[in-house]
Image 1 (spheres, rainbow over the protein chains, first blue to last red):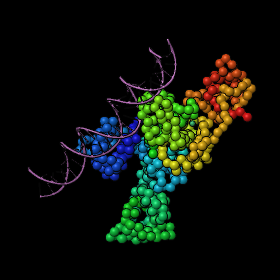
Image 2: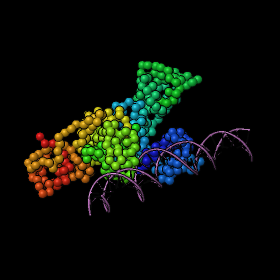
Image 3: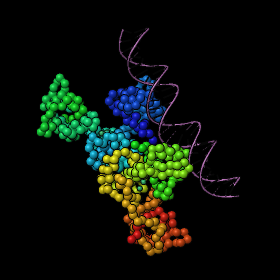
Length: 218
Length: 218
DNA sequence: TTATTTTTTTAGTCTTACCTAAATATGATA
DNA sequence: TATCATATTTAGGTAAGACTAAAAAAATAA
Ligand SMILES: [Mn+2]
Ligand SMILES: [Mn+2]
Ligand SMILES: [Mn+2]
Ligand SMILES: [Mn+2]
């Protein structure tokens, strides 16, 4: 059984490995965990001894297969709970992350398997992120950032890259959510800003917005 | 915000106060928490400084109003989660306690209020224990122990005193659950054992069983 | 009342997961 | 290559929450 702190480190390393693809630096982990590099060194050494990460002094850290499995399972729980909160308890998608951060550490295979079932074995969480199955595998999708679309292309919103409260609330205000159709009416090369059509409304969005919205074309 | 350890102590003291009605001894808490008396002393001193218990050296501990409220809220969460696990996830009533022990420490008023609602604002948990409302008040019922019934009296099972896995599984085997009608066909004064009628089956039960089943007559 | 047993507290350690400050390794610059 | 800046680790400490052993208070017995 791994402690709450260990699970959070494994999760952070998992995400960082995907973002930076390759070894994860001590400082990167410290930033993500909002802790000090020296604390990270302590922890990755311990996780190394437990066989959950491969850590070499001054070189960086990667998850072992075992560590990967544990991290994926924590993420699975996080995302399933988020689905529960939104689908069943009618929470709004910008309210569920912090609660899921707590729920993801409840230990019970039986619980998570029944929850998965109760929710209809969903493949994606409320933010469009894929939910790993019990073996850590998740559905791959061909999503791209809205910022990659050209003028007159359109796509369906399938997820968000950032899921901060502010960003999600902005999207609500603009009536954008998972499943919303978005068409690019204009794109400014100078700053990457766009004019888009959502339903019957057209409006301006900055590059920053476009770089945090995933769409599926096809 | 109180730590997991603090919440567990408050909960233990709450239950002990009701069972022993009066001040709770350090050893009683240690027994309940499966820890050492010296650890208990440390903790009740800290809870005393936080104003959650009234503790006097060598005299014992009681909850303050504030401590009582926090304890009742933890118990509220525990029992609501048990209802969720049984009603929605179809767990069996002997499987839910340990999971609820973890879930009860998830902090979010909004979560528990929505969960309560989702479950239809239940008054009792799967073991017949009353669920405190958000102010700590709970439904009082006139339940008595089956062992208090006399020959030919009957009652409806409304709860269990002990809820260990072994006991609950015994009850299942005998087809006794909340709502089951039980009639006392015979009672042995020497050892308190009984012959009871459940549905169409009659069988012998020991005093120990009869002292752990709550029934409602009338 | 005095002696003995039981209960409770105090003193001193341990582990986990943090921290700061100092030392050291690595990488970039001149 | 020598120097400097940055990244990382080590050393030493802290707080929470546990423990053991010893001291002190309270309860019980003689
Ligand atoms: Mn989340
Ligand atoms: Mn999510
Ligand atoms: Mn329970
Ligand atoms: Mn219960």
